[in-house]
Image 1 (cartoon, helix red, strand yellow):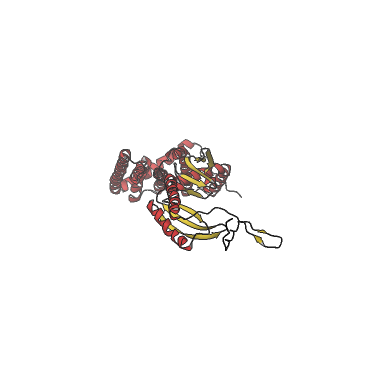
Image 2: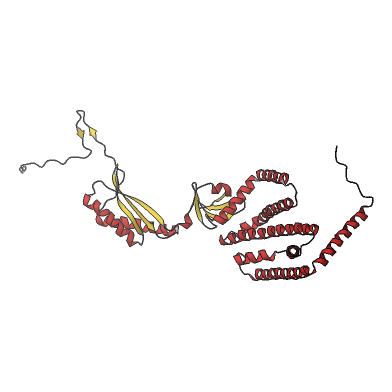
Length: 390
């Protein structure tokens, strides 16, 4: 048999009044029986409330006077300044509740309200700290404030939703509500939203990664795939670059981070390789002096000599390789040094009588009997006896 339904009172208003009178009587008895403890607890609770209020006011003053909003002191001050009045009151009331042995119904009500106040206040603090750290990291990134400001509205919304959703679940769980279905529903909803806006979120998080991890920044010259370009703007969805040939390149942030990126601006030095080809009839003694000559030429121009010497026997030349570093990240300085050293090599080799090679090919022709016909004329043999004059 099913349990009988509870009887509805004939006069609900009178029943509520009787219950309130009962609660008032219980509280009156509690106050009369614990007057000393209540007095001490109320004084302590008042002091705690005043102390928390003073700390909040002090933090708010520090936050207003802070010149650098990205400093940790400013972030902590702004976070403490967000301490709510409800939280301060409930902390004071909970102190009274724990010290003065309140009635069961009143104590449970205070505990529930105290839990709600603490969870909501912690959620507010966490939101302020997370957003403050994001702004701090953005300030360290240099010149990408506008990108972060554009995304800040969405970031605040996402952070607030995540923090307060967790806070709501914690509160409901402490109230005895079964939150399993709610968690499952939030999970399914989050997956649906993530799938629907997958491309947008992917590029947004890629933009945040560029700002925070700083593989490059605005003004840097980078190379990816076969493109070399200067970064002009890092947006929420895409990055705009100016190619060396003048045209504008636009690529989504997610796709850009999937590629291998070379940041040319962050180079400490520029390395230059020269391949120098000499004719085959260069004497061994002269070839042996080539590395020393190359070192002298490079060091005379202020560059750093790395290595230089014989490389390979090419089809029509003896190839030497020269490697040197220009101690500057500026591409123009590297071009200037390469030009000066190249001309210096040509001038010095001309003075030393060292000849550069160029592609040559010799063709040999055979006579009908197989005898090779030289491609050059042979000198006539000198006559052994002079001719008589006629």
